[in-house]
Length: 124
Image 1: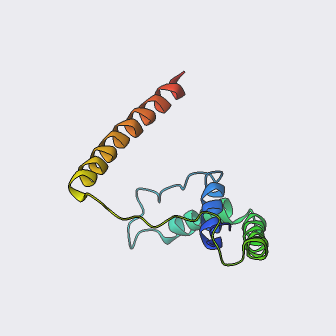
Image 2: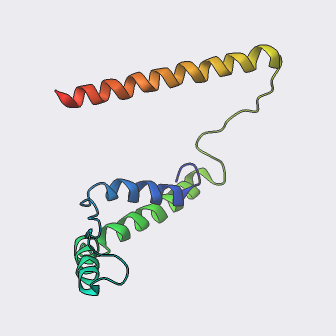
């Protein structure tokens, strides 16, 4: 809400909540279009029971928190953003652009190393 993007906050919170849900079970292998409709009906009922039985409590809480945080930030910050980015101008593009390219490559390598280290730490 501090960035005047309450919907982004809602989607982020719902993404976090989604991780606590059980994984979606695939349709049975023998159920093809025109096969036994009872298999598909049981599968849809199981999905409904697993994913929709929690009610709307968490979603309502996330939406309420987002609206309240947007209101509070609007009262305290007004229309200004919590993070203001100053304007930037390229002075020497032939020097700066290759440096940004190098920064992107190095950042990608650091991210790959971090991901590898995180996976390695999960093994222990």
